[in-house]
Length: 253
Length: 229
Image (cartoon, each protein chain N blue to C red):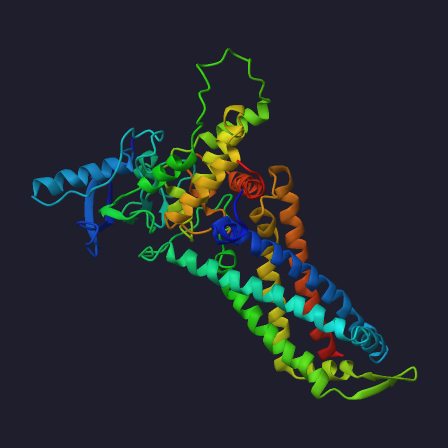
């Protein structure tokens, strides 16, 4: 049964450029289909803005099915909106009430400077990867099935960490704007597999140093990142990152 | 290898310091509470005064122990403050409409997100408490004869202090805040050194809760008991 169309008020952060102070502006949209996605609502509002000669609301998005990690904004104080295990492109209007005012802000962290409106510069995460989030030796082509013996629980744990899409929600949700869940996921994913294990301590050292250099905060073990993560990556990866860093303090690379 | 000085500057190394000093302080506080339980012995303070006198028998070693303890406390405070300042600096432009927890696995509460404030309260408490009983033990406590031996009557000082509702309330508040601080602090210390394995996290969390509740009850119970007596 089709639900009735709804009216929502969108209180959205508008900032014309990195240097602009920025402010909230409120847009009211009538006849919203409850089954449309939140980003589609932004599309609809933007069409009207463009027709009336105003700047559309800038936001990042690509796949719109929660696998690319491009989209992301804070909706009603929660990274990627109120639902768990989803990105903001998987958020639907039926989650909201008719007549509700929805507050939308960009990710806020010194490591993620705002470029425009809801678009932030997340290249800091790329630089953390470039600092060591790879395997530097040639591991050859895809090995034959079962030629590398990896216990199933370990393969699963590595895969859970590898599910990170680098969206930055962990940083956005963290009270300290810490990138520990992201960095921990990358370090754990590679440290648990034989190809990446040999370099795990050097990788931990370099990636942690880069993470600190980008101005992200330290982890206080509050775990809000895990709740906000669209891939529900556990803070166990942060404990593993610390173990790798601790090992790195006492071993030569 | 990472040089120690560089490791201690890193976001992870700083938390190692917080963790190790924090666990050391938890151990101290447990021993402190166990010793204070002698206050509950209904013998007019003989057990407590003998317990306190045992420390004085250590002579100069008492100062060595006290200085060591003070050093751990100062390290925990100094690193705690610098970590907090750096964390605040990581988001200079705050969310205009605030941030809300998504629940589920999150431990975000007023307590876990404000460890600095429970810490500041405990810091102030330590200063007052040291003046109240450590300094005044030397300057104001009388002497008493126990089994033919002259002893400082610390028991008298303590009991006298806890006849005032203001002091009782202050010490009870400190016990409560200590519990709040340890509720997040204890398991967090294990997580910070990477000692949390998924299989253990439930148990460590439960032990943390247990210790927090037990210490809070102990430390707020003793002043209340002495007041009501």
